[in-house]
Image (cartoon, rainbow, N blue to C red; front, top):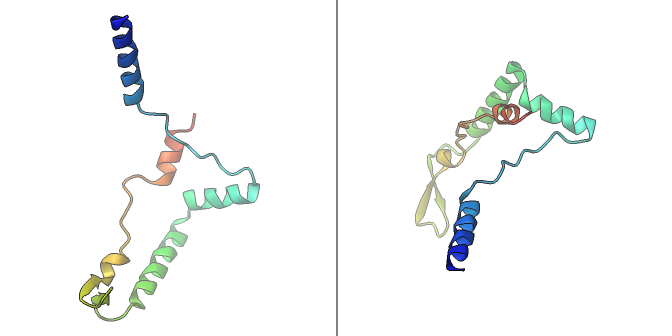
Length: 101
């Protein structure tokens, strides 16, 4: 009985330590919404460049100072760090296509 308790606990620990299957969102069932997802997955380079230029233009509209007063006025916030876009390590399309069967 002690041995069976130990085996049950070991099994429970093994089950708890194993990673669950990844959650993969399929395309939306609505055809129009699915086309939107596919467009952003495989956006033409011209549109991608336009999106980057648009973001840069919006960043240029920020105030001309690098640091802005925040909270009670004693702390400063680096404005450009707050709006910086970090590149992703793995693209959505790579992840999506990897898990397709």
